[in-house]
Image (cartoon, rainbow, N blue to C red):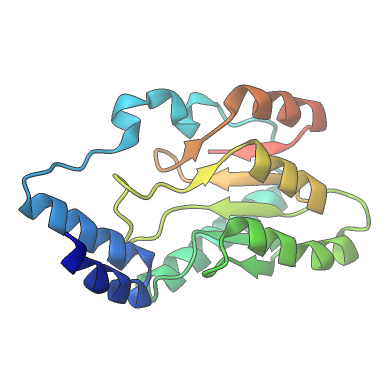
Amino acid sequence: MLRLLPKIIASLRKGDSHALDLVIGILKKNNITVVSCIKYLPELRAENFKSLNNASKQELADIKQGKLILEHINSKFDVGQSIVINNGFVVGIEAAEGTDEMLSKSSSILKKINKNKPSGILIKMPKKIQDLRVDLPTIGYKTIKKCIDIGLRGIALKKNANIFLDQDKSLKLIKKIIFLLKL
């Protein structure tokens, strides 16, 4: 198996989805079946929550715009799973740095335009080329807290395509702050 390591590392140059596909192929050749963790841990599904709090027309438009942008970018490139949209403006798009770092980078822009009033949505959805058995977009308490801290109003997730960690702790925070969670 060690002889495959250089090939796996080389595949990362094309993006993490390519590397995971290669590993899945290797496992399949060795008669190992890959299954989603959701099969055995359904309590991790984001769908365990109903959408919380109502989205405004502008927030719904931002969610739609963010989904369209992510779908377009990810139909051509292996980029990120997340985008921040605020009142029709793209504030941040996730790349190799990951969601948390993208949110940190978006913070200064949001503070300038939000004027201490929560606004803007994090849209997080899988890339078209992602194998959802091994690479589901994930949020949890840390993501929600970070969104609140930088002044976002909510998070939108693609139905049946996300893991939600720390759900009980997150729900308490969402209800306390009146944070939007849209599925």
